[in-house]
Image (cartoon, rainbow, N blue to C red; front, side, top):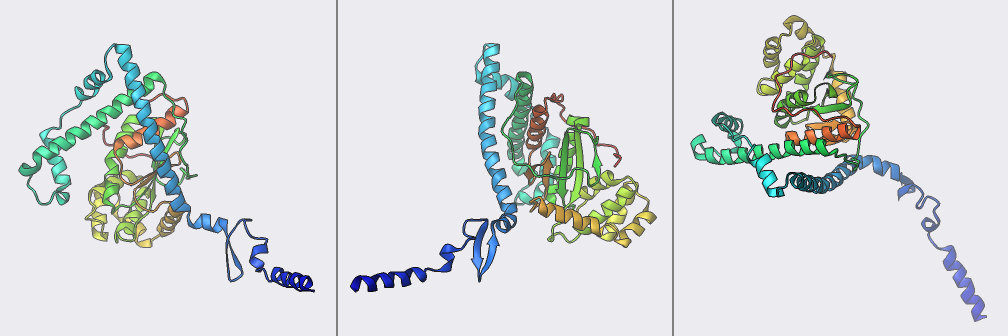
Length: 354
């Protein structure tokens, strides 16, 4: 009798087990149940897409830096052995001795461009420190150039694959051949000071890679920049007259003049016909394009400016020229294409066709 009672009690306990333990959704593409409503794993992935993409990019960057260190060590050692010298002697001859010291104009230019960050110090007070900084920068640039030479000489091909985003390279003002092996898609903000620094980098990349490179401009005006959206529409109106790139350069060079009146003066300076431009800008007909650019940027995981996609691989924020060169070189080498000859700078580009 006691056994029977115990067994019956056990049956009651089993029948009282919560339904969740037997829920068929458990572990089957669902992340949670909220008041009986399922939250799918795909919804979680969508919500976390931008953050997860950033983590993947950071993971790749860490691995790539380690790989780059190994590659450079092996290249320096191989070339040093071929010359019968030490790696240290090789670097002194090819990097230290070939690094151009900064000129007085270079130092003063840096001072004028960065006054707001120098704590109110005069040029005389900080000239030596600026010189040391620019010397280190020039040395780093020369090291990158020399590594590029060695990579081309010894046929380096990086097999470590970065995370990529399927970015459409056909939408937006562009220069460079449509069939170029490298597409560089920029999401930028005309009032963003970090984006302004990218202008000179683009000129240098164009001078270095020429027809191997196609650059596409997309807008991502940040809410904190009150004039950015209007400036983006002004540039689009200038594009109607095939003057996008001259206006692009002028807007970034005059970020304190992006009001309606300031924009009108700048576009005329760039050769835009004022009457047609004013009519275009007042119409607001490029507001939809701006909204589409912003939506695409968010879909691609863009959260700040500038963000550059080189064949779909993301580079966030303002980066040194060498960062973009490395990515473009990787893409060329992975396709079995030669690296272009090295040039120190490129002339200002003429107006490009859309």
